[in-house]
Image 1 (cartoon, rainbow, N blue to C red):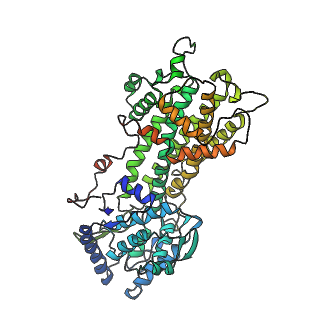
Image 2: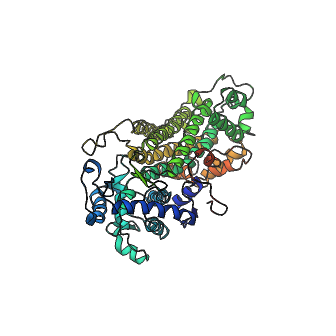
Image 3: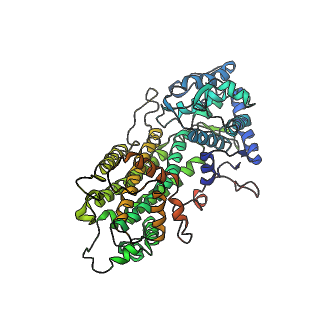
Length: 531
């Protein structure tokens, strides 16, 4: 796949995230890289102070560095900033880091040589995964610690993860036929300054949550039918009056998923319930709002993936080297916090649907969905697990971006905390997926009590998909393995395929057209250079 700097797409980033793709740089990008590198070389040869080229870093920017020590300056930067702790970042995240950093440097505003970009791509294409501890970045002045560990591996001093084991990077590079990178002027700074780690973590969450959100629609619709709820709240006229696009789209999916249900037809007359609980009838309003939030996040992250976020920046047209603050990851932090709220809310309303199903006074089903309540407890404690996970998500959803601790002797006095904001999303996704897995089990069990009536064709497919691996529960059994299977179904994208059977409906995950909204200040690619 060809990288056109500044024109990355979500499709390409998803492919990098999944692994197994080879990346190459569009040849027309190389001229600008060379021009930018020449500006930095002239600065390194000159006498004027230029931050990060012949000065110290951060609070030490007033310290001049001699020409004989410029290479050592960059090497020392990488060594001193490799201070991360904690479990290593996943291969998916590190692949994105390598690709995002290569694309950002290839924009030609960082002053690095072509060999830096080529080495990043070579490491990615060889399937090598630098060992990068997950903790230690505050998301301002760049993701310094994690990007330093990545760079430490590129220069042959760090480590790689091979089959889950840490091995010396030098040997791994040599085995792959990659020459360890020798850093030139400003190149260490350009590699560690930037938001590529926090952006990669946020993209990792966005991609991981996509099938979970889609599963939530199928499972939520199954619960509507299991509870013999009304499809009236999904009437398109209701949602058109509000005009919220996510809400309109979600309601349309619920109408499609429920269409043709015998269960629904059986109680169209004679049902004395006027309105369903909010957890059923307000699903378009709640999940639709979450969808809108995630679509907004996708735009923000795609902009950031295409951005130049190191410092100082090099403008070859007038040989200017200008210090700024593009390394501050506030856009990513706020996007990740918004994603956290959406993830938590999808889980929260799912937990309420489980509570409704097991409450016989509301669902009109056997208590706790047990065939012989009393002797059997059914889903009583499975709901407790769902409640505990929903509560955990409430705590995890507390915004990280509102917290800031000054660093670097108060030179870096406001930071974004974007890296943690994005990193904590994986635990939240897991919690929500488990809640939905429990709901899938409960809704499927509820459907059993309504037989021989059939749900819609689409929802019967979802029911059958679960029953292929998890039988009905006529009496109590060890349910934890069932929860894990149902959760795996929720996360795998299997239920997403049911949604794909409605090609006439709008795509839930907006990929097409995002590039038109980016308004990036880059030249249009010529034919053949687009990814």
